[in-house]
Image (cartoon, rainbow, N blue to C red; front, side):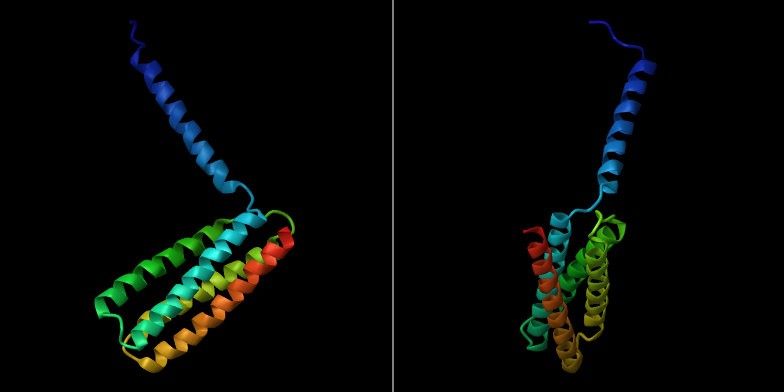
Length: 152
């Protein structure tokens, strides 16, 4: 079997890597459609409900401090990732307002989760955070329903 010169092998490898990078970039630049937006809003809704439940469990003394802090850290990281993804999204025509609503709710949810960590030992702050997260969860649920109705 005949071997190709090193410069040809290097060129093929470089073109393969460049092609893969171009595909990744192109997929990120693709416009966000209604289904993708609905999935993102559903994920945010789940995160809000989970954070509310976590606050309730901590307030009632059913969560050890280590579990509370590690779970809250993971949840906040997930929320930051969701927000970053939404900030990079480009909506398809007609979805601009719904994407902006989703982004605003993602920012509010991230802020509420950050505040949740600050109120760890204060039952009044945990209770307040619970109410705020419950309100965000309801607003996200309503957004998901609007997206479902619009796609039907």
